[in-house]
Image (cartoon, rainbow, N blue to C red; front, side, top):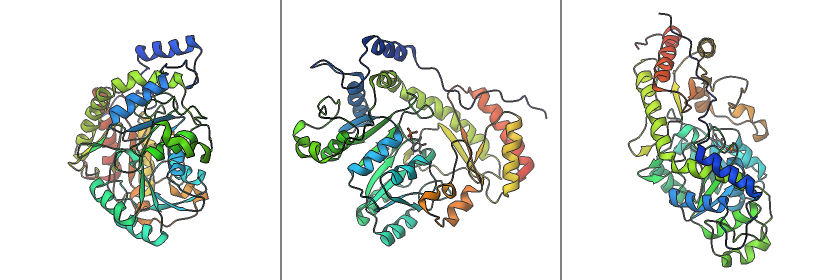
Amino acid sequence: MVRPRFTGSFTQQPSIPDEAIAAAVAVMRSGRLHRYNIATGEESETMALEREYASWQGSRYCIAVASGGQAMQIALRAAGVLPQDAVLTNGFTLAPVPGAIAAVGCSPILIEITEDMVIDLDDLAVKARQTGARHLLLSHMRGHQCDMDRLVRLAADLKLAVIEDCAHTMGATWNGRRSGAFGLAGCFSTQTYKHLNSGEGGLLTSDDAEFIARATILSGSYMLYERHGAGPGKETFADIRLDTPNMSARMDNLRAALLRPQLRMIDESIRAWNERHDYLARRLAACSSIQMPHRPDAEAYVGSSIQFLVPGISSGAAREIVDRLAEVGVELKWFGAEQPVGFTSDHHSWRYAGAQSLPITDAILSGLFDMRLPLTFSLEDCALLADHILDTVAVLASKCDA
Ligand SMILES: *Cc1c(COP(=O)(O)O)cnc(C)c1O
């Protein structure tokens, strides 16, 4: 059967809400774009965002920064990581994660993943003991959370400080607790393809006063650390302000103005993402060649993208699935490609990290497909996407009944 070509754009996000545009225009009219450019007693947009985000996230503290990558770099430094330390992270994540570890002068120690795309906790325990690492940068890649109860127990046993990369889990929970609340800190991104869109931007949350004080100075607060919306009292900064370097990675009021109205609507966005994601997941799960990741009952996710495995598929067939779908307008990413493309790269492309042997992760990635689900796609769009994917996988992997 000949199906119509898919004409949606995988990179098209919804426009910025009018309320956010009006707030950004007001900031521009004021000329006060720098976050600390306020009259005494006034609250800047950035301060208000920090206050509102901490309250929504349920964290004691929050600082707004220039990007998710900066949130991670600052968190690692503020957690006391020193150059040459071993820092553990997932073998499957996005390039800014090992990049943040490299930025603090360390080499990432990559941990295997499971078929559910989460960190392998057994490999984590082995490599933590082998390397004596004290820090884990845990990436909830593509929104998949490992068994967070077991992770918390394991981290306590191994004396590992946990920093969560929540670029894909803003709004997700485990047993009702927000992703980002399970370790020392949570790092969030407000880059265009994440759950809030300010072009670039990041948020760092924690309940630890001294950690967030160090992070605040690192982010470039000068001695203006009291102009923060969800920071600790000034007594916490007494020594920290003199001991900590300023690394200039602030958010500005324009971005904060764009984000605050979006945060008020995020629960509706999450509902819309999950409606699209769950529809597609149901359709794809009906194909016996496709294996969907298992989603535990404890996990509430944000389906802003979808992943599936075609176990045992050859690289030739996988490439052909991607190519054939591209011809009908469907942009599927395949993590088994030899050359990094677009935003997608795997650990073989992180040569600065040193070659690491991850045979299980490699085998999983060779059959892993990934697709963005921007909120500009309708449910009818998702139906056509499912039809195209099932048609193509049926031909190239056999045994699919749509
Ligand atoms: C986007 C992303 C980041 C970093 O966010 P930026 O704001 O782009 O620096 C970190 N981790 C993952 C998994 C991401 O997808």
